[in-house]
Image 1 (cartoon, rainbow, N blue to C red):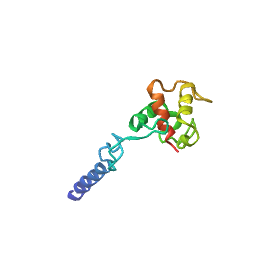
Image 2 (image 1 turned 90 degrees about the vertical axis):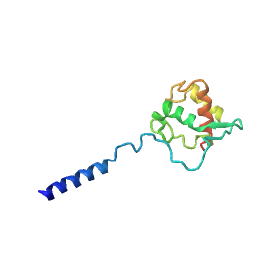
Image 3 (image 1 turned 180 degrees about the horizontal axis):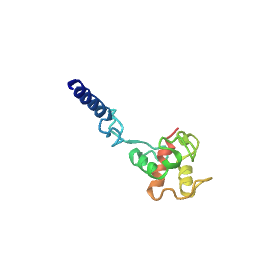
Image 4 (image 1 turned 45 degrees about the vertical axis):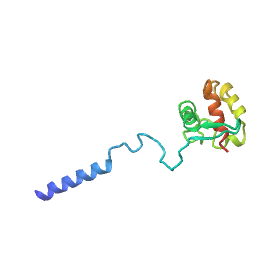
Length: 122
């Protein structure tokens, strides 16, 4: 009886330990690599692009077609779009659409923020 109880307790602890609580990816924040800034230089204006804000806009407007990692899917791969298109050309595509991409996928300041961020992808 004692062996059975000990086996059940050990098995339960093992199962619960393997489950771990399920919060591993709850925040989805990158690990702290010592980089305190989230801004990168912009190619078009010599200013800075708020990378975190641009990524948020991308996730909410573009990731469903272009993939969360910019690798494509229903839409084209954007991992190196900055080597092919300028920030202004990217902004024009975001505003007016191209091919199967509908126009106005983002609006206002988000268009230029996305265009500047994507123009850095080379």
